[in-house]
Image (tube, rainbow over all chains, first blue to last red):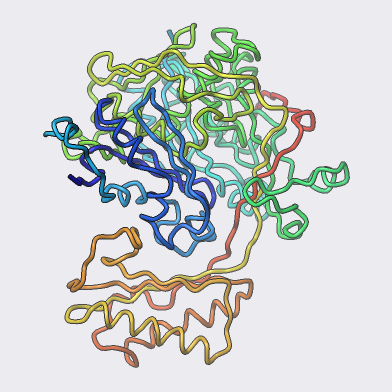
Length: 113
Length: 445
């Protein structure tokens, strides 16, 4: 079964120069193992396609049931250089919420609303 | 326990926030963060035009507005409002509120010392790209070293009511009162890390009390009167995040987690001039209504280098818009984009980049946007940037003619030809901390 990431997590994103960071926080600690398994750096990179020119790094914060992603060369030069509306990556977090997440049958009860 | 509030997350934040913080309940210290990465360059330009400027001009009137509470000893203020001219900022505060005792922290401005550093062998390579500083040397507009919390604590120790710094780190504004009041030393790594993380949580103001918060945002109470954050810091480094109870907003562990992850790099190595904080050591718990408690934070020794914040002129840019409505809104906008690019090509103009977005289709989310095949209206937004101001200016003249000579129904071109703006870019580099000597001065009228 597939669900959008929005069912499992909330996010916040921001910038450091031309790098965008996205924090992905599980909606409850029990969902952290699913996002840690499914939301890989490679999947995040593919989700944003041409928008991200550089690499994607992933860091784990199990104490907060959260992941942190760094998307390098993702903001069209960053800050004041960028010609993009979202030069500071404010909407990248929301954009990631449509990522489709594979849920194992025994995990379906965990996401029941 | 001491209470440290943040009343400004950037220069331009809500003017009422710091006033409400001092009026609605007890706080001991009011931290105000005014500086973003490019703010220093804007201030440097203002100082070049008028030597009495170069600081956050909202700050002195705010001090006058809350001078009564400060004078009564209810609260002391710590702000990086000084920009590139902390002394002028302090003088203006004293002019508007003569009863206040004001200290400044100096020594962060290294704009006159770049060539000295180069002569000493510092390459000042850009921390993102690794490029040496030579290429941008003629274009440098400002250069400042990030200053930590210890010089600010030293300024508090003078008994000043108001401490004004230039390019201090955002987190130092919160950590400084803890160092001053609790006597923390440079090797109290865990406590310095805790105070630093407390600073990270509140440095963006209401972003940790329900502002820009994704989780359950529709039900956040009374956002029109959102409360700005208050840290209740204990001598052992543990702290709570809360707000005045009558103010709006929401504080719980989900909200605080969002802000902890904001603009975060490697969570185990959050590097400041004061320490290296480990975000994977934080333990959060909900500890009552609109109250989160943080414990267990660990940290390591401060790095031998300080980061330089350098701004430089990097060419020119302009961005213009045009709106097309249904039917075929996206097709019309796409055709207009191709026409502009063709005309630029015929003129022989070249740019570092021409970038096009279609609002309501892909402007924010790019390829991650949900499909919207037949939008009722589309705003075309085209930008160009490059080293030649005249070329960018010529580009701006190619947009408005589309109203008469392009696809049908163009509207929403606003005020006509878009403005050409100078690009002030940001360069970060490292310098040995031995090169940077800070000092505290009391400023009098």
